[in-house]
Amino acid sequence: MREGPIGPATDTLLVAKARSGELDAFESIVRARTEAVYRLTFAILGNEADARDATQETFVAAWRHLPRLREPERFEAWLQRIAVNAARMTLRARGRRRVREIPASAVVLATQPSQPGPDGDAWVLDRAMRRLPFDQRAILALHYLEGRSVAELGDVLRIPTGTVKSRLFTARRALDAAIAEEERP
Image (cartoon, rainbow, N blue to C red):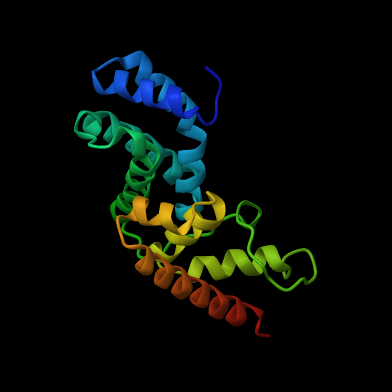
């Protein structure tokens, strides 16, 4: 099976087989989703080693809890929720309070064009993202990096869409303020 997203019919079949204990089916799911889970955890954690740990923990937890998955058709949202929680636990295990840098190339946000290099947009965005708390960084990564809609974010985070909108607004505002602070001479 190739790396990358699995089609909906194949996805449902693999999840059903994995839920019944078929290790080969779960291995196919892992191969297909490892890159996406790693990208998400790296965007949240900003550290390769921590992202690898969180990615591994995501799949270990998914295997353990797969038989209890109530809605197999929502496997993707369920797995992303596990990944966000694994990233959170990785931060706690390391005793960190704040999330470290995120590669600006991975997240496309509208910023004013400026010079390339250490004082350019990428560096400003990286430093600004470092200032954000975990929950704000996670919701921005899920929305902008993973391309999740407001409704999908509600599923992943288990919160109402109105709350998602509010948190996105707050996170964007915090990012704008952090960018403004970084751009000050």
